[in-house]
Length: 114
Image 1 (cartoon, one colour):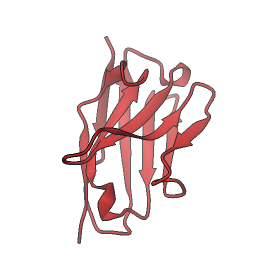
Image 2 (image 1 turned 60 degrees about the horizontal axis):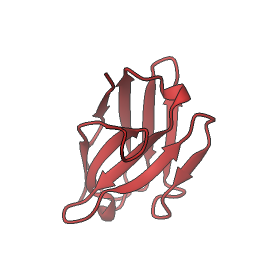
Image 3 (image 1 turned 90 degrees about the horizontal axis):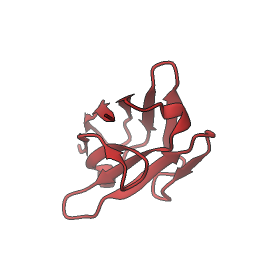
């Protein structure tokens, strides 16, 4: 059974930083495509960042240069480092394995506000 547990969300001022963590069990993140998605109120869920098994990454245009996806194979954990946060980054952030038909975490709220 796959379980993805996100943590690290919170309230941050514009320009600030947060690091989200996704602790995985039931899968090996090193050999799976792992992603971060987000859903803002009234909007559809969107892909933020993706890392494939080879370590290649992909980012939404809106976060390129500000967000970085990474993983720690020893901890079987995926991270999303978010810098220069903007109010429009406010959303619930979800960890994902295997694409939209795969496994999802419960989400962690990120609020960017002064």
